[in-house]
Length: 164
Image (cartoon, rainbow, N blue to C red; front, side, top):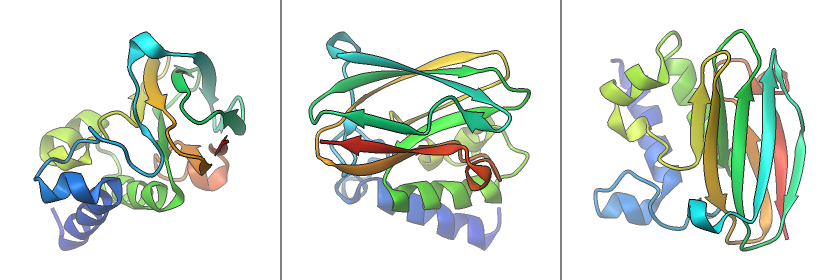
C-alpha cells in the first residue's frame, strides 16, 4: 500500500472519533458529532433508500434529535453502492480513502485495513442486495448521507440530513 493511502486512513480514523482513537479503538462505539449506532430494539422510524445508477430515491431527510432510525438500503443498481452517514469532513475523508482503494471490495478493504470499517455508520451492498443500518441522531445539526464509491457522490449520490 502506498504512503497516500496510510495518510487518508489516518485522517479517516481521526474524523471518526478522537476519543476512541486515544483508547486504540477504531470502532464508532460511542457518540460522535453525527450520533451513534442505534439499538435495533429502539427504532422509532424506518427509511428505505433505493440506490440506482447513480442516485438515491431521496436527497433530503429530517429527523428529531434522539430519534433512532433504521435505514434500509435497497440496491436496484448494476454496481455496488453504500450508504454512509456522517458530517461533511467524515464523508470527504471516506471518499478519498475509497478512491485510493478503487477496484477493491469493502470486504477486501476491511481485511487489508481494519480501521477502514465504519462500524455502524455505513453499509455497502452488491446489486440486488438489501442491507440495513440503525443510527441514533443525538445532536441537532446538518449532516450527510452518501455513496462514497469513486465518482458516485460527485454526480449526486448524496443527500442532506437535518436533525432538529
